[in-house]
Length: 222
Image (cartoon, rainbow, N blue to C red; front, side):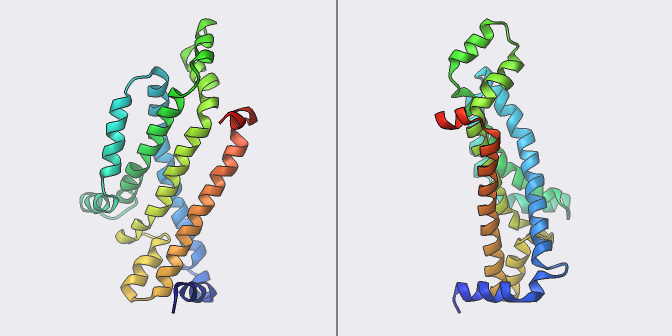
């Protein structure tokens, strides 16, 4: 049987659409893990990226942090956190957040630094406070690139949140891990397909968000 046959067999089986191991339940678990990790990563990366980008300091340090974060293996960090903290959601959140912070942090910094300095200087010239300059002048222009960093982080989280199944949590990774253990390749292919579809849906959500949040003038000049 090829991959298409495995996928068709998985999704056509009504048993996979009900109960605690059903697709709706596992999908909601995966989305919950992903949203928590994205919110935590954004809470860390956005303020630091905005502040350092506005003041133009710390670029080299951010690059080092981003390189270190990307170099850490998510699965190895998961195992380490599991050994230190035991079962629970925290050991899963740590590697996901570490994975997601670098693209948010670096992209936000670069987005603010790439804003045309002329309106920023004009705002300072009329006595506007630094916080107002950041949020009213720089942020609207930098928003498309900032959203691209959040989008990249979200897709990485969705793709990597399957590791939650390694520490007995749920999510779509449950199908992949259980399927490999049981040699049930319908489950493996079905789980991988659902993760891919969720990643594509994430792209669509951020595309729609950019259409709503970014002003038409900024979109045309981007």
